Length: 352
Image: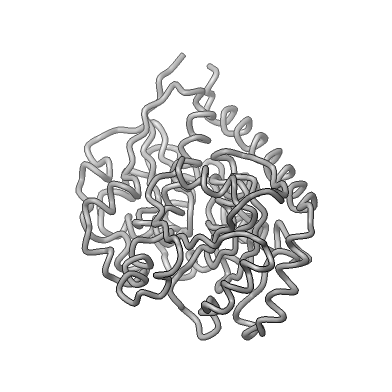
């Protein structure tokens, strides 16, 4: 059987969410090629080490990719059999292409797989580089229905809605954990006026509601750095996530997870922890509409701030749920993922 060389263009921010994206994507790549492959990629962990100054800078499309990339990390000079873009928003892969003029012509010489991406509608309008490579895309998958629809309208290839690859890092079903002694709050710096709703009085009320200790977690080093400087949560246990297995272990035993990040939700789901996600952008909106169309476990902060009473009422309802409706949506996405893998293997003649 052929041994495959894969060039993987991953998201590359110093963020545990991107780390689990990369791990989930690599797991799918290895399944497609039945572990008979070598994968060249620049992981989020490496990117954080190469670019420590990123820990002090805001997250923008312009500065998350551009620094510290070398021809070796891009795979220039290598001749991969297949190129993989995924997962995460598509603008990140366009940024990689912009800083490597040789990349686009090289990409067009081999099949491209797009795995578990989001925000395709935004990208195709803003980044014409993606339009240049679309003829070479052999098959694609999206993490939500809206992105899948946009991709089907744009790309001349099969498109599957498989959910985020990170969902399958552990792939546990969400179950209630009434005997757990703690719950998790995934904190992020405010990006919209209504985003900052974690007050100390709110945390104390949550501890009363859950009858458990609050643990504050940070998916991004910059959020942790800000918290340490301001001493916002000095009276609570704080954990800066930088190891996937430890993060999943922490989440898997939590009574509940309150998250202000999409991959706080996805980490909770793959760990089997009940959650509520306060989202601020289209990434969270599209994901919630796909897996929780009734918004039992989500709230759009752009609709306006909630009172503490409204917050508690929403969390009470989520805490009382068995999450089977959400689990069933994940089951559908998992079946789509399996079909995507089988179709990809046929297109690439993996078994020949």
